[in-house]
Length: 297
Image (cartoon, rainbow, N blue to C red; front, side):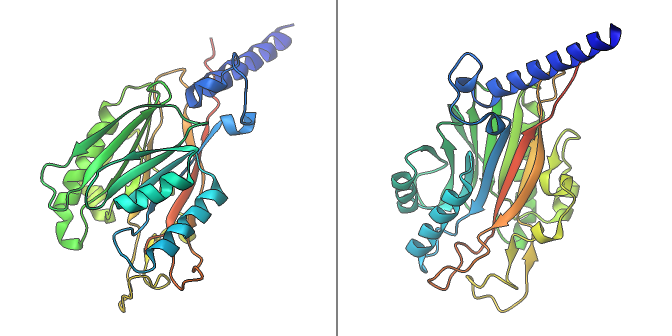
C-alpha cells in the first residue's frame, strides 16, 4: 500500500512540475488552452545568438539571405542579434512576420532580438546604456512570459585595448543577474569580445553558468571568431577567440521549474554561393530544457 501511495505521489509531482513549466514558457499553451506546439516543444527553449556583421557592405544582401536560410532551418524561439543596421532590420521584419523584432537602437549599428510570437509572449523591453562606452554599446533587456523569463543581449566593447570597458560592461550584466527575482530565469547571449582572464577578474555569481562550460567545453564549439577558417575579414594572421558567449541563471526559488542547458552547436560554418560566410562570426544555436524538480514532504 505504501509503495503504491509513493508512486502516485511522484507521478502527481511530475504532472504538476511539467504543467507549471508549460505555463512558464508559454501561458497560451497551458492545460486550459488549446495547444498548438507539441508537448515536447513546450518543455524546451531554443535560441540563436549571432553577430551578423551587418556594418560591412561586402556581399551584405547575400549574407543576409544566408542568415534567413539558417533561421528557417533551425526555427529558434528566440534570436539574439548584434551588428544590425536599420536596413538589415527592415529586411528581417519582412521575412519573419511570425516573429516580433525588438531593436536595441535606431542609428549606426545596434543589437536586436527576434521573438517567435507563438512561443514567447512579449511583456516589456529596456535599453541599458553603458555610461563609459566609446562605441555606443548598450544592454538590451527583454521580459517575456509574464515576467518569468528575462532575455538579455549585448555587443561588448571591441579590441584588446578596451579590456577595462568590457569588464565594466560585464559588471552591468552581472548586477542584472544578481538582482533578478529568484523565480525568474535569466538568459544572456551576445558578442562579448571577452577573454577568459577578464571573466575571471570580474567573476560571475555562483548561480550563473557559462553554457559552453556546463556542456563539457566541447572543442568543436569553442571558437566563434576564427580566422583560420572564416575569411570574411581577410585577416592574414591567425586569431581564434570565444567572443560569443551564453550565460544562464535558472530560476532559483524552491519549487519553480528550472531551465538547464541541453545542447549547442555552431552555425554558419558553410560558405555561401557568393564566396562569403554569413558573418565573420559563427552563430551559436543552443537549447535549454526544463529540469524535473520534486519537493518531497
